[in-house]
Amino acid sequence: MAYLKVSGTKIVDQNGKEVILRGAGIGGWMNMENFISGYPGCEFQIRAALADVVGKEKSEFFFDKFLEYFFQDADAAFFKSLGLNCIRIPFNYRHFEDDMNPRVLKPEGFKHLDRVIDLCSKHGIYTILDLHTAPGGQNTDWHSDAGTHIANFWNHKDFQDRTVWLWEELAKHYIGNTWIAGYNPLNEPTDPYHTRVVDFYDRIYQAIRRIDPHHALFFDGNTFASDFSHFGDVYKRWENSAYSIHDYTLFGFPSSPEQYVGNETQLHRLRRSYEKKREWLDERGLCVWNGEWGPVYARKEYEGERTDLINEERYKVLKDQLGIYNKDRLSWSIWLYKDIGFQGMVYVSRSTPYMTLFKDFLAQKHRLAIDAWGADDSQVRHIYQPLIDHVLREVPPEHQNLYPFPVWKLSDRVGRLSRNILVSEFLVKPWAEHFRGKSEKDLEDIAKSFAFENCLHREGLNKILTDNASLVAES
Image (cartoon, rainbow, N blue to C red; front, top):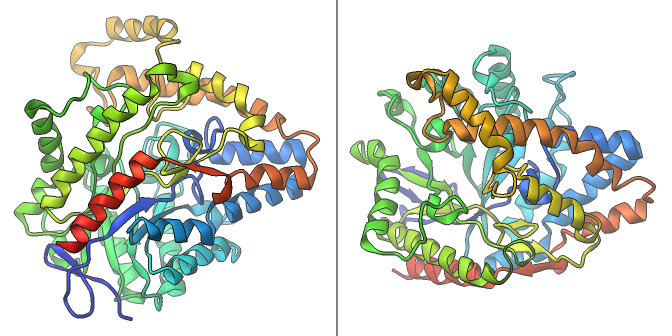
């Protein structure tokens, strides 16, 4: 078997035959995220807090078991049964080096990554390796695991140097693996000057190519994979490279401006948002990959009798997005394969030890809206609105929209700093206290809650993905 490669606007095999990658990201695994697995704040915070409560050895045991059970052979077999052929694997740099011991490779970092890549290849599934969290945080969100709203990756050269070093190590390790469709060097960068990201991409391209001339590279646009307008002509020397957009739509979230019915006006907005993200690339005949997209879903414990109606609306959004993508024969990776019930294709049963243990805590998290992703802040809006109003009064209108506007409005920035960073920080230790006094067997049982056999299937979502995957595969 030979490497996949980028040829013009297409991804092709060794015979030049087009390969359309259809799949999902296994977010929340080697880069844990609060809304996916139920903790508050950032991954580095909960890892430290759990070690304080149960000790370093037991903490490492729990997280290792979590990684083991989260994705196993049964997951890969199920994924393949849906007609999907590619998994994007987000990972955190902390698996491979420590901030206090930089540029020293932790060999155990490859343990689970190798295992899942091999499982996927056994079932005929390609993988794309996605550096979701880089030193210092390459974006302003929680999933860069920096604990701040400042993307300091762009302000300190050493963070960039360490990332180049890490990709060199990854390229050495995976150069011969043809089931890896390619490398996604940096997830969702947010460089407010728009030029540093291009310079860094050029540097990472050269570094990887010195070691691995074979694997395709997938470059995210700036501002959360939406903006390529400052990329200039440097792409002309980036051979075998594709470009990643992330095509989320507000219609798929609780903050949707209106009920989605799929009328012509709404369909136009869906198409226009998607076309704007890829317009610069299409003008230059470049290959586009939709590395993330997808609605979130209602849960009966929070939305009650409205749950099914909300989710049917979200499925309509999903179908209409896929209808747009199919016309372009677009490769895509939906977000998300597995979680605790908000967005995943499969999700942890509420009767498992993990969900039972954290039932009340998760309800508190939801009420306080301390996760940024798809938050419903209706129960606490009255608390934060006076702060928003205060900033609006005191700051001149021309200075109220700070980068990354319009992705973050002023109200979103207040929410990030006050709810998602400040309040969540105070709940990190209470989260860890749930584990106090647990034996190793208890910890393993809690981690095993994430195993495939303990998960429910989001049948509506999976059927839509299967139907559309086969449509494209057969055309």
